Structures are given as C-alpha cells and as structure tokens.
Image 1 (cartoon, rainbow, N blue to C red):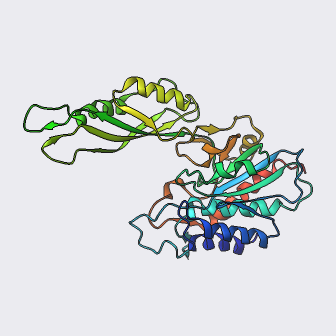
Image 2 (image 1 turned 90 degrees about the horizontal axis):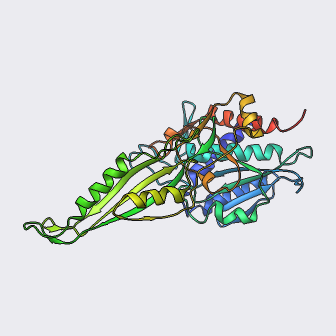
Image 3 (image 1 turned 180 degrees about the horizontal axis):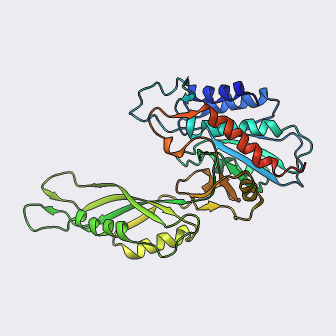
Length: 351
C-alpha cells in the first residue's frame, strides 16, 4: 500500500460529516473505495463490510473492525474540523485520530491480503457505525450477517500498543426521592440531601476484587439535577453515575452491590457494554509479543464491548487526542499502523 493511498482515504473521511447515526455518506465512500480496490463490499444500515476473495469456511476468521462515525466537534476548535489539512507531518480534522486513522490502516491491511490464496485464515473487514454513541445500528445490527468470527482486532488509537482487555460500562440513572416543602419552614424532606449521602457512597466505595489487567472498578458521578425554585425543598434529585467495570465482576454483580448499598432508585441504561479481552496465551497476543508491542488494559470503551469473541484493541494515534479540539494524527502513525497490523497477521502465515 503506497503512502499516497494512506492520505487519500483518511482525508476523504474527514471531509464528510459522519456523526453517530448520520454516517450514510461515509458508508457510501467506503463502499466505493473497497470496490475500487477490487473487493466486494456489503452494507447494512451504515455498516460496510467485505470478506477476502478466497474465503474458506473451514479456516478461522479474523475480524478487522473500526468505526467511521465521529463525535460532534469540540467547541474549542480553531480549525475547520472538516478541512482535512496536512501541516508539519500532521493530518488535522475531526475523526482523524478517533478512529479514521485506524480505519484506513485496517482497510489497507484487508486489501493487502484480500486476494491471496495461501492464507491460513479468512479476513473480514468491518467499518461499523454508531460506535461513539453505542447505538443499536452498529456492530450489533450487522453481527448476524458476518461469517463466524474466531477473534477480532479492533482499531482504535492506542499508539499501536495492544490493549488485551477493556473495561465495560454501566451508565446509571439515579433518583433520590424526598418530599416537597417550603424552604423557609422546617417542612419536607430534601432530596438533594438524600442524594448527597448516596453520592458520597459512590465516591468512597471500593470493590474488593481487582482485575489483573484492568485494576479496580471505577465509579464517577457525572451529572446532577434537582429543584427549580429557590424557596421550594426539592422532592426529587436526579443524578448520573458512570461505572467502568472490570472482568473481576459481571455487570449484574456490580449493579446488585450498588442497589444494596444506596437508598436512591438506580436504573441501568443498558447491560450491553461488557468487559472484554483475550487470553494472554492467545496466538494473537504471542504475535504481539514477537513484534515487541506493549500489552495493557484499557479504561475506555469501544466496539470491543459488543463483539462476543476474543478481541484486542490496537491502532495508530493517541487516545488522549480523541474528542479534543483540533484533532490530528501524525502521518508516520498511519504508516506505523499499517506495519503493525500486517506484522501481526504475518505471524500467522508460515514462510
């Protein structure tokens, strides 16, 4: 894959707005690009995928997945987020780092192998939608359409190191219920005060079990709302808790522990975003060790949580740049991404 082709696809993706749920035009671009490379893409919703030309059902299948949706631009942008400008070895633009770079590298990797007849594995490339909002129109929608997958490489900005585990996510909507009353008199039961007790529990509680790769379960109160008038004791206080769950617990175990320890009403928005990862003795992890890649556990959540087979997360770019103003990826990181992905797969091909 030539350097010029590395530039073409990431820049084209940046120039087309593709907010979660609104990825129709980038899906069309990816379909067209794959056809130009001699592949036969399929599409469901805004998910686009392709299978290697000499697919054989008796062989294991490796999924190469990344997403083509983006968040909305950070308000602090000083550049046009859709301009796709190259300066000083950096490609600027919304989604360049998260995850257009990884997506382009995986697409190029797929094309690199797609016509070979000697592969000991099959390849499926999937450009998924609705990753940023964990929407139902993404990986879950298209998964039944894919061939059976043995394991997956998920493209996200990891500095091309290998995330062998990823925390799951519980978003909790909590309601502390009191009783309205006049603030000037000793009336009512202040729901804000009730919420404070529970919020302090979320702040201070520590789950006993630690994950070898992911550390501790982390709970963070991220939003709160109560009352509309200065002279009325609020009857309800609503707050939101972001819970990052490790493989030491199931989501159900964490939710039960929380509900047993707080007085407020607690409801989980979803039980879909589960911890994920791969056995440290898996051949893909051994391939990463051979290449000298660092192994780590990731605190952030991706489409890995929705992929029900062993998986790793790896790709060019830096997670610290994701969702920031004036997002960028280094051009040399794109080259590194392609070399890393092909290096991993080459480990499965006997000389």
